[in-house]
Every structure is written in structure tokens, then in C-alpha cells.
Image (cartoon, rainbow, N blue to C red):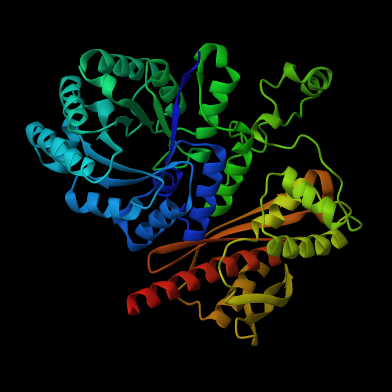
Length: 516
């Protein structure tokens, strides 16, 4: 009988701490809903005390998402624990996740505490948390560089204090699989009450071993793996959830373990996180990268056509990736379009389907056929939940190798006013964004990052769509935006306005809350 492994997803906490991966409340709720559909056991919704926005998002997820435990991270301090509990107390299954460093390096230089002081604080704060919440997890930060004997003592103490899960993090990605496996085995053999708690592992990817270490720990007896969609997270990221799941699925005879995860939801969960963060996976990313199921070499293509198992150890269908393409064009009806959305894994409300279908028809007039990637790109532009303070009405550019690029942009404000400005720049994109800044008063906004992907250029040629992602900053804060169009400049303007609208909406909300 395969052993059941719990999946603890920290995309919304550790994943969001990755530079450039911040998400707004609507994004976090969308991702949380995807994680619940995916079947994770625990969603770590955030670090409630980190900011008012974090508290609000943790609380909203706790009150909204069902069928899964919802956790908030907190330091081993009463104030942190109280805040975490206040945020998650309305969850169907709340969990307080508190932590304290146990390595000599962290205790001396970060905590400035002796091992005895750390032990006393850990036990005391777990007892405090347990009096509030029936499910408490304790993490020994930097466990892989901690003294084993001291770890055993802390683990035994926090379990006696009420911790039902004890997390052994490889916080800086220092461990290697054989070493980490031995660490878990030794904990099981040297902590007398370890049978009263689940051993969890949280592995970072600094040496590219996050998934390998997590799987080695599970083989050694760990009962919970902490991971993120697309492997996002601090520095080089975390163990990637999709890679862990498909290892267990593809090599089930070797691992003899199972999870609650519905692997056919992996692809859409990955896309949801990509949209929310604006950070794309590299094409050769395992499982969910664009090339993961692509075959270009002639000998590979021949083998796959003869028998897919020659070069595919898992099927694209097993992660929810469509293996075929339904030809959709300007003559396609609403029913066919809705069926394709459902096949691609989207669950979209009627009002938004109407808007997306209208955009589909506009796109279909420009293209001979509309591919699955085109539809995904269209969907990515909807559902942000952010009002359009500014909307693109039209633009005209004049550019060339021997003249200064000029752009005339006209926007429609939320009051219905049409405002037009002209600007110059280093090329049509720069000129267009300069014109937008003139209209919105964006002198304090800085374009931090910009990326452009041509959707299905190989298959569809010159009528391919441009999918743009931008990141803007203002006063040290960051917002993401995305836009899609068959015109590259238009896609960039839409992406920029998407980020500006998100920024405007959030700042106005904060101003309203502070006034109250």
C-alpha cells in the first residue's frame, strides 16, 4: 500500500517573496483556488504580520477557500502568533506555522541567543500557539546546518509542547540528497516522541537540488513536502511542486508513495502563477516548460510517431496539457469556443466569457486560425478584478531608422474622458509609453522590467500575437501587468496600463482604509 505524502504549498508565501513575484489580492485568491482544485493538503497563504496587505490576503483566503488547510507563517513571538491566528481563525482547517532558527550561525549572528534560550523560546511559543489553534507546525530554520543533537532536543520539546508537524528546512539549499536522507533517518531514530508528529521538509534550490533533496527525505520517512508552483521562491527558488508530483507519478514503483494531487491540474496551476506574478518559466523547465513535450530532432519525431513512449516518459495529458489543437477561426461559434476554454482547464464566469469571446472574434478576423496558445494569451488579459482607470483607445506611431520615433496615444479615463498626448522616444515602444506617462502623470513610475513573447510564431507566422509582461515600480513598490495583441506596440501599451491600473486601484484602496 503506497504511503500518503502531504503536499504543503507555499507559493503564496515563500514563492511571493521571490523578487518580482508579488501578487495582488485577486491574484492570490485565483492562485489559492487553483491550488485547492489541484488537491494540495495545506496552502500557506502568507506571512500575516508582514504588512496589512499580507494580513488581508491571508484572511481572505482563510475565509474563502475550502477543502484544504490554510496556514500563516509567523516568527516564534506572541505578537506574530496572535496576528497569524487572527488572520486564519475563520479557515475550515487553520494552521499556525511558527519558526525559529537552530543553526549555530543563525543563533549567534541573527538571533544573538544561546542554544538554551532558543530551546526555551521554541517550546514556550509552540505552547502559546497550541492554546490558540489545534494544528501547529514548527520549523527549525537552517536545520541542515544545525547541530543534530540540539535539533533532536528542540524537536522533542516542541512536539511535547503541542506541535503536530515538525519542519526540517534546508533553508539555504546547502544539503545534498544522501546527506539530507540520513538527517531524516537520524531524526526518526533519535527523537523519542517523533511518532506523535509528521516530519516535513522545505528545500531550497540554491544548488539545484531542491526536488532531489525533498524526494530523498520522503524516501527516508518524511510525511510532508513543502514546495511551490514553478519552483518560485527566495533566491534560486524552492522545490517545484510539479516536479515532485510527476516524479512520484512517473516512478511510482520506485517511490511507492501517493498524494491527493490531481496531476491533470498542474499545467493550469502553472499558468495561473505565471499570470499572477508576470514571471515566465524558462522553455526547458521540467514538466510545465513550453519545450517539455516538444520534439524537434527528426529521429525523436520519428520515434514519438511510432510510439510516444520512445521519448515521452509521461504524457502531456497527465499534467493537463492538450495534445491536439482544435482549429478555431472567425467562423467558429460561441459553443465551440466555450468547449475549448473548458478543455484548456479554464473555469470562467459568464460575463468574462462574453468579453473574451468578443476579443477572440476580433483576433480571428486578423488571423487565419486561433491556436490554444492564442486563447491562453487572451484569457491572461482578463479576470484581474481591477477597474480600468485608463483604457487604450487608439495610438499612432511614426518611426524609422533616420527619424526620431513619435507616438500619439489616446486613452479613455474611467470617467469616459478621452485624453490624447504626443511624445518622442528611443523607438516606438519608448515613445508610446512616454505619451502614456504624460496622460497619467507617471513621472514617478519606473519601468523596471519588460518582456515580450511571440505566441505561436512558428505555427502561425506573421499574424502571431505579441504577449507582453511589464513590471513597474513607484516609491520602492512593484506592480505587474500583461497585455496581448497582434500588434507588438499595442501589447506593450496594454501591459503597461494593466500595471498602472493595478497600482492605482491598490493605492486608492489603501488610502480609503487609512481614512477609515
